[in-house]
Image (tube, rainbow, N blue to C red; front, side):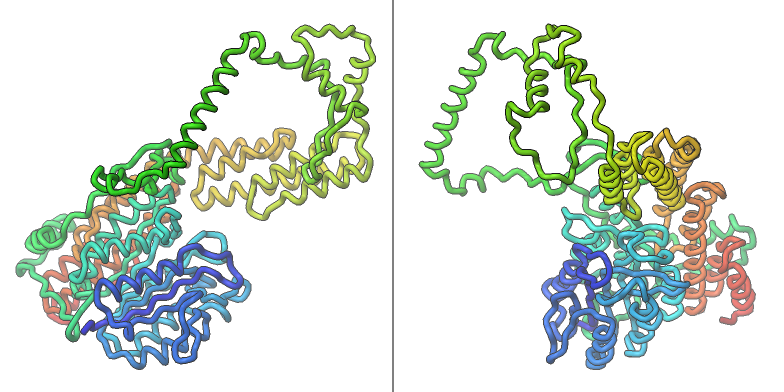
Length: 630
């Protein structure tokens, strides 16, 4: 019998937040895979989505009340050793507290309608599971909910509770969905990993797969790159079965030679660490199969991702060619269809003969009319209905037809009535006309869309000097120009330099002071975008160095991050990673000390760099371990 329990929650149709597209599908796919492909009994799997079935006369829709009800009522009946907790939906950090947003969560009242993550995890811990695996596909669509990036608090208290945590993205990133996948990108990678490793999967396998695959899927589907944030409380948990059967899962015995002698220098510590883990690395290499090759990418066009790097547009929805043997089995076309296609081909041939057989002069393109002879036509109202067909009595219609059929040489005498009519200025705007233009301009305004303000400015500019409400129109244009620049600055502050530059370029030149500031900012952001590209390559390189249970790999990755200069784009991300990876080294060292391998624990702890929050804890622990005490 399967010795694990699963709760899968997925929310699309939020009551107070912009809906998601595939969160419900994510949860359903996780439950289906566990039930159908790993043999999990239905009574050990709970699904809570927008449309999940009622159980025992009680709704399973993931409201705040229902989620806590089922955590108490349903989990009380479970007696397995491992709990899978999967959540796909919105999360938010508010005043330093991380919340998961239920279907009735309201951004205007997060503390009362959101679910505090710590409170949720405490509920799970009280149920007596030996191991809890939390898989959180949260932090989607940044900017939808106010607050700081979610996940920082969860990543801190999860290891303290002994909970293994996998977040769908790093704190400074966001999760994304892909139409071609029909899932969130994280959930799609998770499903791939479960199918790839099957019943033998352990947390070390899963984390390694997600580290490699998640960025690949992001690039493949034209989404900003996201990387998983993985926190494992101990090395034993990294090697425990995630789909255990027949009782409590047993931790794999770590194999490492005994290390003698005390190393003091950092470089010597690294060398000792690598020697101590040599046999572990050999076993890992033999155990973990290489990732499956991606299908060949079909290039359609090239573009730029959010980091300014060129990538190729690929289309995973392109279907493979049907083998000849399969094609032969397909029924033939109906006879009537063949007749229709033949008739169509004959008709096309006759049309082509008629068209290309005409004299060259007849099909020659009509020369464009002389602009000087065209009448001045006021811009149409885009909100108005289409105009009825004009008649010969309409002066605009007559002038337009004359201009369209004019000969290349203008044969109209210079002082004819037609010429005088064409040079007459449009009738002056009335107060009502100006008010209508301003009202239309204001309909384009959207809170966070620079393009909407730009369209509003373009419309308001139709009110020329001397027209009624000109001063009011200019005040709007000035204010909207400043808002565009503010939007651009907000994007740049988040590191989205390409979209910041695109917004700043919408500031009209007529607004001289704001335009000058925008141009200065474009120059600065262009340079910062280049720096960001270089630093992102460094960060990606560091991520690839990390191996879940090897302290020396984290240390090498931290040293790689030091190449990102302070004050440059990406520095904060590098600093956060340094903190997170230093904590992982400390956890690895503690795990080794708990097994009595004090010398290995000391070697690992010495790899924690100064200036990190884990450094002082590590130094105190080293002093204890040197005396043979935990």
